[in-house]
Length: 342
Ligand code: ADP
Ligand code: MG
Image (cartoon, rainbow, N blue to C red; front, side, top):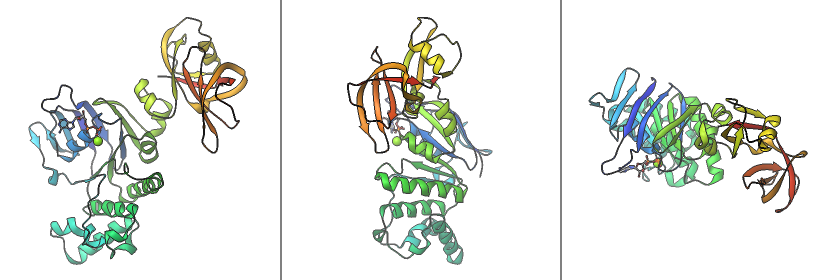
């Protein structure tokens, strides 16, 4: 296994005005689990397909260890990249047992007998399906079938596993179960994994690193904790976490972490400083008599709390949580305990 490096890769499809992928550079560390996060159409699948070898970059270079996969006039065919790709729809052979489905890629490669049997059982064990080896896919649940598809891609011991929104069609309960499976699969296999998703919660829960894309460009790469605490720019700030973004004037120069005193001064708008986008997370907005007045514009009961949208006098909207019942139209006072300048 080795480090995967994308070096300034771009992809323009013929007859389209804008590049689908535009100058993306990214290093995926060996054994890392990278989530590629961004809205639909931002170029995630195209990046994945270039890594897998199904698309040739218009520009740039892709290397795995010291091997050039694409670029500098070279293009290694997908079957020679030792990668595996898992799609949303995982086609299993209905007439074959689970073990035969998992062993199929080995059969194609001429691996036989005891070696094949052992590798199949190892792969099934990585997804905790050993007891199901002799069943047919039809006798499994949706989640189990997807685990068979994962085992099948693990069995060839790929250097890199590529997953394109594999949970997008599943219901919430099954998604949670599968997130657990992916995490465990990654920990046990030690494979380098790249996971495409448009769901920020999924990206943060699964990955060791998150790369955020928008309109073909890479905006930020960092650990989930880092990207949550210190997002760069309005696009990442709006995509990660449930925050609201306020446009305020900041007299604090380059300062990015803002406390209640600073937030209060900015809310009072002294007319000084520069225009700034301030990210405010709902857990940092507290109903408090020493705060400033806002109007409740919506209330959503979430079981353990109410999620509120609150309008400032100038119409900008904040989000907050509370355990107290409030009504739309109520005037309440809030203190903002923390803000992050984007
Ligand atoms: P995502 O996976 O983030 O939803 P895609 O990588 O599928 O985004 O697509 C990025 C952009 O490239 C989109 O505008 C899409 O329409 C365009 N695109 C993707 N594949 C092709 C193709 N084969 N030919 C032309 N345009 C394409
Ligand atoms: Mg896609």
